[in-house]
Length: 87
Image (cartoon, rainbow, N blue to C red; front, side):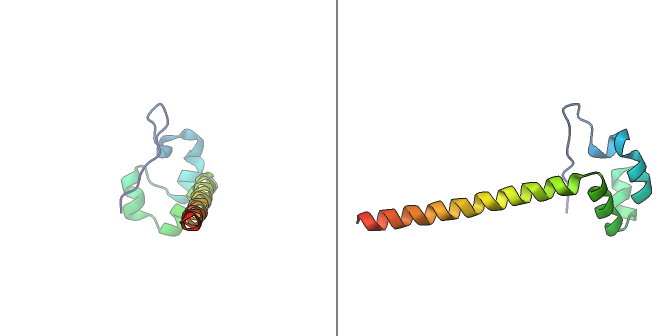
């Protein structure tokens, strides 16, 4: 599975930010993103993602997508109901 890396406007990856360096050393302890997926336990990767706040952002996007899907389904069913009532 390939990982999509978020990039800021300056084209810096999340892995490069000095603001996350303490957490990165605590959970990951490697210098490159390639080494993370080759040498670091998945539970440490998840803990790091949670600590830097990225997990909650992903979860928020998931819930927004889920709500959009439900609303789309409801509107589709409503449209079908209206169209069948007109015939």
